Length: 121
Image (cartoon, rainbow, N blue to C red; front, side, top):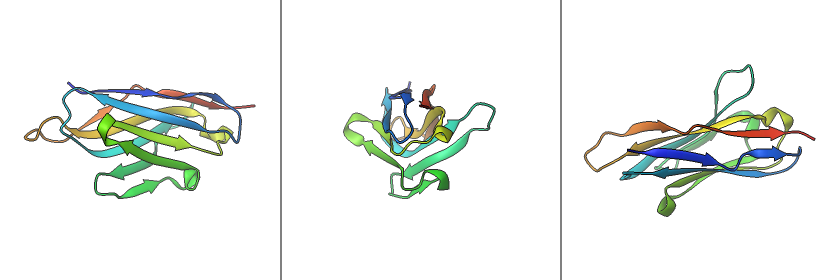
């Protein structure tokens, strides 16, 4: 069974930085894709950043140049570095990883439970 645990959220002032982590545990053969989403109060969940194992990376326009998605394969952990944070970045952030538990298993998407980011002075 694969589990994802997010961490790193909190309260930060505008202009500040946070690094979110998404640690995967359990049976993991490969992480084929990783995505960060966010959901602000009263709004739909939106894709923030996505990357594939092949190196394709995409960001929503509102975070380009400020956020960076990365991974530590040895730790099965995915990160979202968030700089120059703005009040409109306030949301619950979720990671979604597409994981093959074993070499013969199909790739499946797994969700974390989310971590809250509040950007406020």
